[in-house]
Amino acid sequence: MDARRYTSLAITLHWLVAIGIIVNVFLALTWDFYPENSVRPAIDLHKSIGITVLGLAIMRLLWRFTHTPPALPVGYAKWEVQLSHVTHVLLYVIIFAMPITGWMHDSAWKAAADNPLTLFGVIPFPRISYIMTLDPVTKEQMHDLFGGFHEAVGYAIYGLVGLHVLGALKHQFFDKQRELQRMWYTGEPE
Image (cartoon, rainbow, N blue to C red):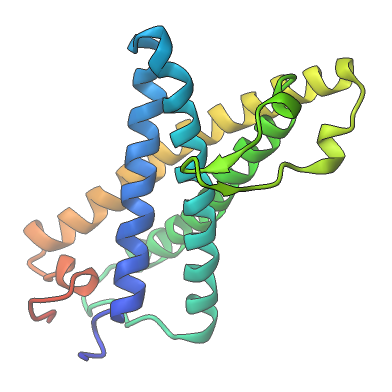
Protein backbone atom coordinates (compact mmCIF):
# COMPACT_ATOMS: atom_id res chain seq x y z
CA MET A 1 0.00 0.00 0.00
CA ASP A 2 1.16 3.50 -0.78
CA ALA A 3 2.26 5.31 2.40
CA ARG A 4 0.23 8.34 1.30
CA ARG A 5 -3.04 6.40 1.39
CA TYR A 6 -4.95 5.22 4.44
CA THR A 7 -5.14 1.48 5.08
CA SER A 8 -8.07 -0.47 3.67
CA LEU A 9 -9.49 -0.90 7.16
CA ALA A 10 -9.31 2.86 7.87
CA ILE A 11 -10.94 3.60 4.51
CA THR A 12 -13.73 1.08 5.16
CA LEU A 13 -14.40 2.42 8.67
CA HIS A 14 -14.37 6.02 7.38
CA TRP A 15 -16.99 5.32 4.71
CA LEU A 16 -19.17 3.10 6.92
CA VAL A 17 -19.30 5.83 9.58
CA ALA A 18 -19.99 8.48 6.90
CA ILE A 19 -22.82 6.43 5.38
CA GLY A 20 -24.29 5.72 8.82
CA ILE A 21 -24.28 9.42 9.69
CA ILE A 22 -25.82 10.40 6.35
CA VAL A 23 -28.61 7.82 6.68
CA ASN A 24 -29.30 8.84 10.27
CA VAL A 25 -29.45 12.53 9.41
CA PHE A 26 -31.83 11.71 6.56
CA LEU A 27 -34.06 9.65 8.88
CA ALA A 28 -34.12 12.37 11.56
CA LEU A 29 -35.00 15.06 9.02
CA THR A 30 -37.75 13.08 7.34
CA TRP A 31 -39.61 10.94 9.89
CA ASP A 32 -42.02 13.77 10.68
CA PHE A 33 -43.38 13.25 7.15
CA TYR A 34 -43.81 9.46 7.43
CA PRO A 35 -47.18 7.78 7.91
CA GLU A 36 -47.90 7.22 11.62
CA ASN A 37 -47.15 3.48 11.48
CA SER A 38 -43.72 4.12 9.91
CA VAL A 39 -42.37 6.64 12.43
CA ARG A 40 -41.47 4.18 15.23
CA PRO A 41 -39.64 1.79 12.82
CA ALA A 42 -37.69 4.77 11.43
CA ILE A 43 -36.71 5.88 14.94
CA ASP A 44 -35.71 2.32 15.84
CA LEU A 45 -33.57 2.10 12.69
CA HIS A 46 -32.02 5.48 13.62
CA LYS A 47 -31.09 4.08 17.05
CA SER A 48 -29.63 0.91 15.54
CA ILE A 49 -27.52 2.83 13.06
CA GLY A 50 -26.39 5.25 15.78
CA ILE A 51 -25.19 2.43 18.03
CA THR A 52 -23.48 0.80 15.05
CA VAL A 53 -21.73 4.10 14.26
CA LEU A 54 -20.54 4.21 17.89
CA GLY A 55 -19.04 0.72 17.55
CA LEU A 56 -17.39 1.62 14.24
CA ALA A 57 -16.07 4.86 15.74
CA ILE A 58 -14.49 2.93 18.61
CA MET A 59 -12.81 0.65 16.06
CA ARG A 60 -11.68 3.69 14.06
CA LEU A 61 -10.22 5.37 17.13
CA LEU A 62 -8.37 2.18 18.13
CA TRP A 63 -6.97 1.99 14.61
CA ARG A 64 -5.93 5.64 14.81
CA PHE A 65 -4.09 5.10 18.11
CA THR A 66 -2.16 2.15 16.66
CA HIS A 67 -1.45 3.48 13.15
CA THR A 68 0.11 6.69 11.95
CA PRO A 69 -2.07 8.22 9.25
CA PRO A 70 -0.44 9.13 5.97
CA ALA A 71 1.20 12.52 5.87
CA LEU A 72 -0.69 15.37 4.30
CA PRO A 73 0.50 16.25 0.80
CA VAL A 74 3.19 18.90 0.63
CA GLY A 75 2.02 22.37 -0.22
CA TYR A 76 -0.67 22.81 2.43
CA ALA A 77 -0.53 26.21 4.08
CA LYS A 78 0.14 26.13 7.83
CA TRP A 79 -3.42 27.29 8.57
CA GLU A 80 -4.80 24.47 6.38
CA VAL A 81 -2.81 21.86 8.30
CA GLN A 82 -3.98 23.29 11.62
CA LEU A 83 -7.60 23.54 10.45
CA SER A 84 -7.42 19.96 9.17
CA HIS A 85 -6.19 18.67 12.52
CA VAL A 86 -8.75 20.66 14.53
CA THR A 87 -11.58 19.55 12.22
CA HIS A 88 -10.58 15.88 12.51
CA VAL A 89 -10.39 16.03 16.32
CA LEU A 90 -13.80 17.73 16.47
CA LEU A 91 -15.23 15.16 14.04
CA TYR A 92 -14.07 12.35 16.35
CA VAL A 93 -15.64 14.15 19.34
CA ILE A 94 -18.91 14.64 17.45
CA ILE A 95 -18.97 11.09 16.06
CA PHE A 96 -18.83 9.84 19.66
CA ALA A 97 -21.10 12.53 21.11
CA MET A 98 -23.94 11.87 18.65
CA PRO A 99 -24.64 8.23 19.55
CA ILE A 100 -23.81 8.68 23.25
CA THR A 101 -26.23 11.58 23.70
CA GLY A 102 -28.81 9.65 21.66
CA TRP A 103 -28.34 6.58 23.87
CA MET A 104 -28.73 8.73 26.98
CA HIS A 105 -31.83 10.38 25.50
CA ASP A 106 -33.31 6.99 24.67
CA SER A 107 -32.48 5.61 28.13
CA ALA A 108 -34.44 8.50 29.69
CA TRP A 109 -37.50 7.87 27.49
CA LYS A 110 -40.51 7.30 29.72
CA ALA A 111 -41.61 4.26 27.68
CA ALA A 112 -38.11 2.71 27.52
CA ALA A 113 -38.94 -0.02 30.05
CA ASP A 114 -41.88 -1.16 27.91
CA ASN A 115 -39.99 -1.00 24.60
CA PRO A 116 -36.75 -3.01 24.66
CA LEU A 117 -33.95 -1.65 22.53
CA THR A 118 -32.83 -4.09 19.86
CA LEU A 119 -30.32 -3.47 17.11
CA PHE A 120 -32.03 -3.88 13.77
CA GLY A 121 -34.86 -5.70 15.58
CA VAL A 122 -32.60 -8.67 16.35
CA ILE A 123 -29.81 -7.98 18.86
CA PRO A 124 -30.84 -6.86 22.37
CA PHE A 125 -28.93 -3.78 23.46
CA PRO A 126 -28.92 -2.38 27.01
CA ARG A 127 -30.02 1.04 27.96
CA ILE A 128 -28.06 3.00 30.56
CA SER A 129 -29.36 1.55 33.82
CA TYR A 130 -28.53 4.58 35.97
CA ILE A 131 -30.72 6.77 33.77
CA MET A 132 -33.47 4.13 33.56
CA THR A 133 -33.79 4.05 37.37
CA LEU A 134 -34.20 7.81 37.87
CA ASP A 135 -37.51 9.02 39.27
CA PRO A 136 -40.04 9.88 36.53
CA VAL A 137 -39.75 13.67 36.86
CA THR A 138 -35.95 13.65 36.75
CA LYS A 139 -35.99 11.13 33.94
CA GLU A 140 -38.27 13.38 31.87
CA GLN A 141 -35.96 16.33 32.52
CA MET A 142 -32.97 14.21 31.46
CA HIS A 143 -34.86 13.06 28.36
CA ASP A 144 -35.37 16.68 27.31
CA LEU A 145 -31.82 17.69 28.24
CA PHE A 146 -30.15 14.80 26.38
CA GLY A 147 -32.49 15.28 23.44
CA GLY A 148 -31.41 18.92 23.26
CA PHE A 149 -27.74 17.91 23.41
CA HIS A 150 -28.30 15.29 20.71
CA GLU A 151 -29.95 17.85 18.45
CA ALA A 152 -27.24 20.49 19.09
CA VAL A 153 -24.52 17.97 18.29
CA GLY A 154 -26.44 17.13 15.12
CA TYR A 155 -26.18 20.75 13.98
CA ALA A 156 -22.47 20.78 14.81
CA ILE A 157 -21.90 17.71 12.65
CA TYR A 158 -23.50 19.45 9.65
CA GLY A 159 -20.93 22.22 9.89
CA LEU A 160 -17.94 19.96 10.53
CA VAL A 161 -18.81 17.48 7.80
CA GLY A 162 -19.39 20.38 5.41
CA LEU A 163 -15.98 21.85 6.27
CA HIS A 164 -14.35 18.43 5.91
CA VAL A 165 -15.93 17.80 2.50
CA LEU A 166 -15.24 21.31 1.21
CA GLY A 167 -11.61 21.04 2.28
CA ALA A 168 -11.16 17.71 0.53
CA LEU A 169 -12.82 19.01 -2.65
CA LYS A 170 -10.75 22.21 -2.59
CA HIS A 171 -7.51 20.23 -2.39
CA GLN A 172 -8.67 17.76 -5.04
CA PHE A 173 -10.04 20.11 -7.66
CA PHE A 174 -8.49 23.53 -7.05
CA ASP A 175 -5.08 22.56 -5.69
CA LYS A 176 -4.83 19.37 -7.84
CA GLN A 177 -3.48 17.36 -4.90
CA ARG A 178 -5.45 14.15 -5.50
CA GLU A 179 -6.76 14.30 -1.94
CA LEU A 180 -9.70 11.95 -2.49
CA GLN A 181 -7.41 9.09 -3.52
CA ARG A 182 -5.95 9.03 0.02
CA MET A 183 -9.33 7.85 1.36
CA TRP A 184 -10.29 5.48 -1.46
CA TYR A 185 -9.16 1.98 -2.40
CA THR A 186 -7.90 2.79 -5.90
CA GLY A 187 -6.17 5.64 -7.71
CA GLU A 188 -2.71 6.95 -7.10
CA PRO A 189 -2.32 9.67 -4.49
CA GLU A 190 0.47 12.13 -5.21
